[in-house]
Image 1 (tube, rainbow, N blue to C red):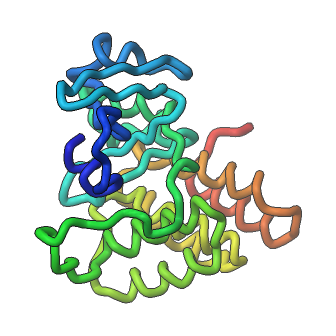
Image 2: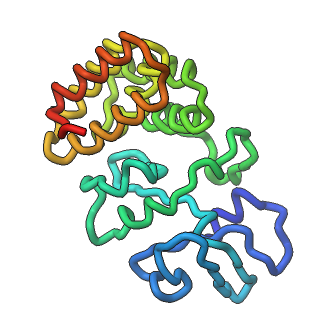
Length: 227
């Protein structure tokens, strides 16, 4: 929590704490009353007090060497690549990525300099932010750069943002190809997530023969259950 406030409100001097980092594994039932929406959160840091609400939370999961993931409330509640005892699948339902702004308001303290070389995780994180604001051309462009790096994801769901971006840009062969690559990593764990992803792609894109062909091909190759 100290680091979050140091980065995002470096000039903060009041007794009101703007950000709190709460782990469900040790805060649930205490300062974090339950993993349910619209519950008040009160936490006394001694140096200041945090007052928040579970409906204004961003859930994220970090399991290196995979990248840090801002959890998707539509997909990650059923993501069994997330460890059971982390409780983060349950927390995913509360995640509100729309609270993340796409402007560089954070200022990293100098001790964190210099910025690391841009690898796979940089492009994944940047593309995920672009996805949140619907900047699909940027997602597609970042995907082209990321897949040309010679680096690779350590979690198959890190390809999802690019699958979605390519689909929105009508680059169906790329979307289908990377969908199959993700599926092949762990069919049983990734299948339900990819099926939900393709359901969202179908729902969010306008009717077209190309969309219907690609969605049908994806659902068939993934052996998605009938709807």
